[in-house]
Image (spheres, rainbow, N blue to C red):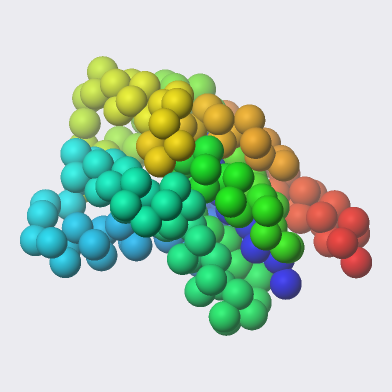
Length: 188
């Protein structure tokens, strides 16, 4: 059994990698976003980036910095099949997961203009923002030194494998397929 965590910048292609692993490789998918949204809805708050980030930070601060991903990892272990945890956003989350068996951390990044065009195209409720807001949101999440808060830069630096995704979906899937084959060869 292999559990992959994925981190990366906004709109870089985390969901594309998740979709590929689920569709082509039969991975189970565990979403930190869904976990957080469930708590936001339970509290009757609006679901947007302005509530998601503070809620995630609150959950990490209250229950421990690795709480969200540790809960998702426990679910994955209980199912007992290859899984992907999307998305690791705090250094303490990455560190907690990297201590666990059968875990690999992927990171994905791309040019900011490419990423912004991608989020505009997908039009989720949290993505209907200006380019300036996109950059400001990312800056807020990029390098916070507090362990329970988001630090994408630190998570990317802790990744076992990094993907630069400025090309096509097919190019990204090929790179993931190659890395996955390398992991399987090393762990068999």
